[in-house]
Amino acid sequence: MTITNNHFDDIMKNRRSIRKYKEVEITDHTIKAIFELALRAPSANNLQPWTFRVIKSKAAKDQFSHLFKWNRSQYETSSAMIIVLVDTRFASRAPQIYDKAVSQGSMSIEVRDRQLENFKKQNPNPLDVLKTAYLDAGLVAMNIMLTARSFGYDTCPIGGFDRLNAPLAFGLENHEAVMAISIGVADDFGNNSVRLDFDQVGQIH
Ligand SMILES: Cc1cc2nc3c(=O)[nH]c(=O)nc-3n(C[C@H](O)[C@H](O)[C@H](O)COP(=O)(O)O)c2cc1C
Image (cartoon, rainbow, N blue to C red; front, side):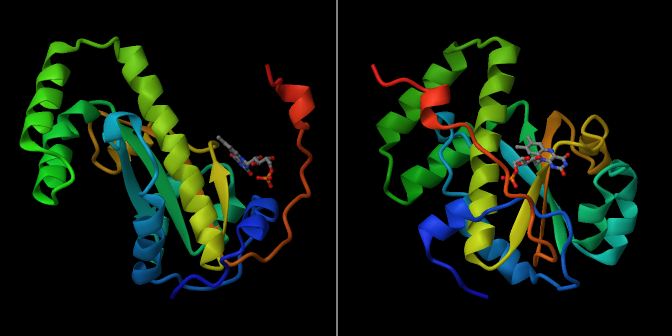
């Protein structure tokens, strides 16, 4: 599966939250191809605090069904449900990420060592850490939804599921669940939802 729609304007304007999907399988290859692009999302200090779990097989849909008391149509009809979580201890990812940057030649050893030293000295407020993680997760989630559209799939972002119990259901400690994203081939048109205009929400100074 490759990109079937490379029209940025169409991808942006015609994305809708789709709540009913056709019975179509999505391959692991396609899921990984979507992630390959979506994971280009920016994140604070490039620390990529996100973790994903993809519920795809019938067995997995049965296993995690209890997390989705609401939004049943998306859960049952989608080709897969992507759970977007954040690692509340994401700073611990720094060595892995910066070592990779050094090994591919995009960061010097000196910069890596200085950055890692800086992280050790910082003692950020846990609420600020969490806010950063959620902010970054929102950016990658949007990337997933837009990339999915370019592959011919539609999505629905979902906050209405058992976010409290989701991390442990996947055996993930020190994580919070941010949102789920259903993905599949649309079987409805979604709503033509309104947006406030820039002049109603913004000002140029
Ligand atoms: C954080 C977040 C949580 C959402 N949760 C749900 C949800 O639980 N169920 C649902 O059907 N739609 C959910 N939505 C979709 C919104 O209702 C939808 O994005 C909004 O009405 C605008 O419509 P559109 O996405 O079709 O443009 C959620 C959207 C966001 C961003």
